[in-house]
Image 1: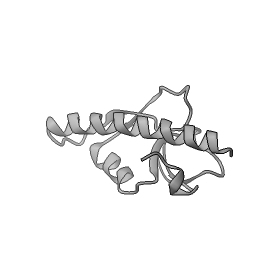
Image 2 (image 1 turned 180 degrees about the vertical axis):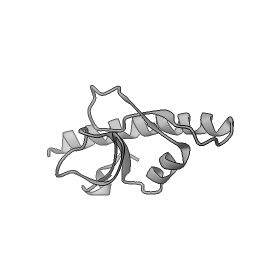
Image 3 (image 1 turned 45 degrees about the vertical axis):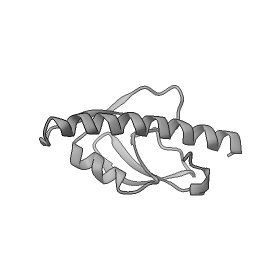
Length: 104
């Protein structure tokens, strides 16, 4: 994968993670109930605007690893991401490339 593509993927995942952090914060402000919330797919595709459903607890587990992201099944990047868990139609992936490639 070229350096430009790695940078672009990291920027995209960072943007979607920021959006999901705001969703999580808003949901937590209304209480921590067990139902699922709509989060944005954190895949690296610039064309993806799909949603996935996770409970706050499950999204919190994704965020325990700085290189972990929640994506819809089928949105994984073979060779660059490792699926560490599946929850229905959601795949929890861990980025396998050098963390220095990530956007701060």
